Image (cartoon, rainbow, N blue to C red; front, side, top):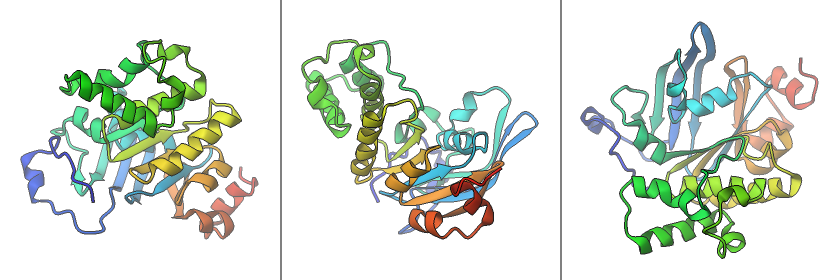
Length: 271
């Protein structure tokens, strides 16, 4: 397992032991509430290193809420509270003492709609690096290039790094957002329907990119597209009404699901 930046952990966490073969991330009995709405109800899931896990289910089933919980993004929503454990390399990050800025450095996120900063292509990636203390211009340029190459975007933008990121196409903007996330060198990437707003060609490029990125990262993707889940993921979890109905390897879930609700959903007879 890769060495983890533990700067967000408090001292008591040093007594916790990460065992060999332990998941990169996991949740134990995780509950998420929006006021009186019990949106996530006791979810237990594990996510292993260098694998892609897809979260599927009907709209409103809780899959995006669950994904945002994994790097504490729901903390920014008034009235939201969480109970249970969110384990990152064996350490519970669902604690008030945890430094969320560092959590989100380790656990990057890309949203449904591309959201580049209103800055140049170069600064979209360099901005967060500078905030984390990287000042050397050569080092910044090297990290920007490496990130853009990893996101399969370098060859398309290398001569236009000073142009506004908003001048890029939708698909390019989304790959830029992925490059921005991986520039921070996280271990986990959370992708919330990253291709839902894109055309088929751009979607194909994102899916190809996911296959490449899993060589370096643990990836968790929310998708409404079951064909996409089948194409890109190693494991799939089916969510319904805030609970995980079934989770297994993707091939088994789509060809021989154990639960009737899962069967009904993937066959289009759900509702």
